[in-house]
Length: 367
Picture (cartoon, rainbow, N blue to C red):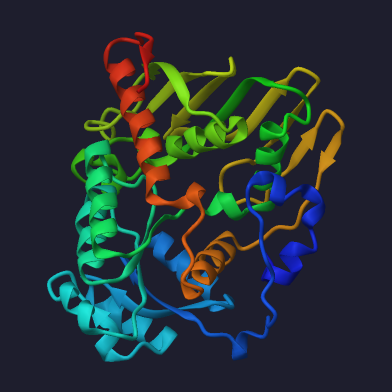
């Protein structure tokens, strides 16, 4: 993965960034040493927090300026690696005092799902902009509270949807929404991996809110929504069999669902913890387009019925954080497609999928 600057990103404009709803304007100065950077505090120093920090090491418009962690040994390691001053290191008890720290502009919440609501609201009350990882929360009601809290505090709330800034996915969005091959009729979007750790927080419902649907299925719902440019209107879902009862006592091991869209498209999806799958396919009136790998960290491989797709492999975290930072540094509103409202829309769909599966697969309307 190479560093991907705004200038190099714009050089690949032939794949239709503007058509995908992502019209970028290059800065006059792309010299990182002369560029003001957004100061970000990462809340939660697990695996993905590490990925974000590594991405920001090469970012042009943001830096890791602070951390929030409940583990003193992690605090010491990160302090040394990222040269973080003691005043920018917080734990979960003294986190609210970040309100007086002018050297922190934004808090990126990377905690277990059930903790997102509390720390997004606390960050907002402290006057800090917020990025929150997916899923936004564990209920749609929680999402609404988070959105309202950020609006009341006058701060911006972004979803950590890295794929919205990824070239292959920008192209998927263009191909679908601009109907390059006509109306999309059927899609498949599935993501899964093998999980065998009974201690991982993702298999404990109190922290995760659910199983692979919450962790992985949210990406499948996302890609179907932005390829069609529509909201799903119906769902039918089925839980898969439990093959490891020692691990999957609280959450599903796998789940399959079918979303119906107002334009007539249908998306079939599976998210699972019992095997590896990572693909997207769209069949349209006059052709098709697909990726496999498709929804993970890449590198992605894609093709259409007209030929192969070939775009650069980027550091997804670096590009996402840079693009969000540019907007906030400029005092501009974030794009609609990454605002908190987008996370709410996904959560409404996830809740409907669970409701259908719990009813034995009954087809339900989504509203």
